[in-house]
Length: 314
Image (cartoon, rainbow, N blue to C red; front, side, top):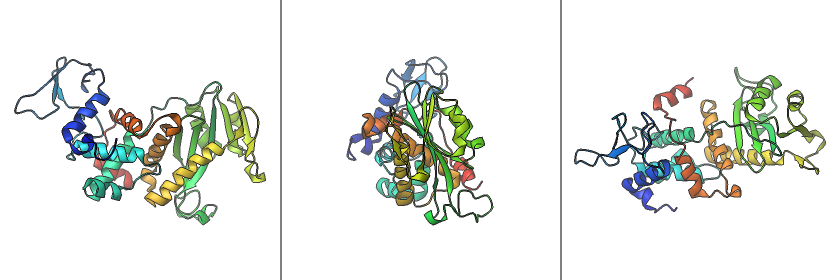
């Protein structure tokens, strides 16, 4: 793909590409789920891409039930925004999206959040027999000098202006991040139990919150950063350098691209970075494949402007 591709300049070409990507076996009715049992309505009074299901008789298009539904933005601009967000390693700002697409900042901001909503994964357990998952936490937002300051405003945690992010990274695999209230075992252990297979080799630092839960996995190895220990050569290699590299990309994106991320929307930004990392070039997934994978995930994840606004003011 490149920015002059027909799917980015022609709404009909964009629709055809989206249909081919989402419906490789034929149209899928979003109302009853029947596959390839729909008739394309091509009358003069019908808009392009309209189908009628032969089973339930409901009408639909490829955007019904997706994050693109009921948008007045042309579909080719939606696909271009999806491509830009999928291919920008450290993210792309809504201001830049707006300038590139020729839409207002408000429209671009909402589009970006809808696309991020589609980036969430299916929640299947990470790791497994013979696989390594690294777990760690970090702080994002605010000034780095405030990381360990105890003086906070009401409701703040992790230092003045800081937010706590707990992440799981599977070596040669996926990443999954969470915005959490604190780094206690009571908060982090349920996340580990829910998201990581017990057959996994778990790698963490030597923080106390991992000691008990670590016993539930195939193995639990730690490194002592306080004593400048970052790697021990064994099989598998004992280190958390993989997750530290992920955090480096996350922080460069938040600091250099977005500058500020609202606590209300942090989870969606994390999903964005998780998606790109989990579908990275090192795993043989290029920009085009990554974009098409995201287009396959847009179903069943509608996000209204009212819902986004309510989260921002909650």
